[in-house]
Length: 515
Image (spheres, one colour):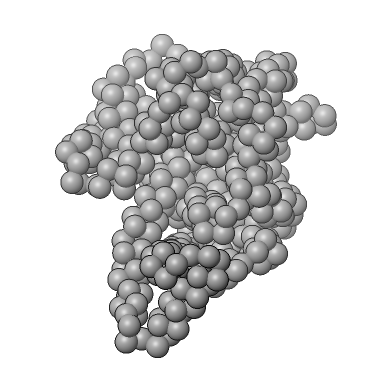
């Protein structure tokens, strides 16, 4: 039975807050990596495991979250995840060396994996069946805004304090969320209690998904299959996935119920969620690097740029839910969202080295509106045919696919940037020769400028060559980031036909047996 009045809103606030904890922590650490690196005396490759370990642990637990919620009770599992996440945050802030910090980040990721899908299922249970679109929209506030505002919050905390506070800030929020969960969230049946545990399924899932996520996170920095352990992990992920699917389709008590794939809308929704993750996390990954590496923005400035778009997403979400309730097809809204994301990418692809903060305001607002039009309709389309316990299972798989889509997006765009930078650099260097009047004029101009500052001819010539080299590097990077924006935009634009493979349905209702 759905909740009413103030209790409904308190539970809504609680689950959104808890999911925000997990989602903000997916990106907040990225801006603190240089400070952590210097403070703990670690290499960049080692510090990168803070993000990799968290993501791997997170994506392993996501598909199991429905089974865990069913076995231990959704409220109990959700409360345990919040408490464990809060404790892990405290331990991360108190870590004295990198090994401890990575271990506690993995613990944080394991706890965080239980927050997202369980929060979504609790929210769907809390709202009346006719208002599921609004409930999904409210949940989307955390899912879309969290990764966007993470760098802003992280940048601000680093401006006023030190890196442990990016973890300590979770503690009061976690305590509040735990109290509200214990006090207000309704108990759910422990449907899986007493059933045998599919240990082989858990082991194979951890091997398959964990290996795949590690390959995606570390592949580019390790030169992909030129590194033996990346090759070994790639083979492990493929074999592990095949064995996992075989195991789950033949056992009587699977931890992931693949029978829900019989619903066409959910099966297609897995792909559209993957695409959403590609666009959401890929764009959040490329844009800050572009701003900081090429335009010289600080992490805080970059975060502040992303914030207005996040606000527009927040404002739009409730209206999306209302439009779904008024029977406006989710496919139509998602189509507009994908098109707006393509427009955003197209506008950013025209950036120059002289671009300022004002040039990014409108594109990021368009992105914010587009993401609001994407998340809620895509999630609604995916879960529209699921019933009862299938809601928790479907939410876990759906969120896992969005996370994997983000990892694929970041890996693909990182590789693209690496490859295309060399391509554009080679093309630009063709024009750097004494037979090109434009080059000769600019080179001589640099020499004269340096000589005017007191350097002799040989020193000025050396500095002029370095200046030309710097200009070529910047221009090649600018063209490379333009390519990355185009690829991200085209991936979403080309995915529009997938939307129309899903069933049109006027109202997405939660089945009576869920209440």
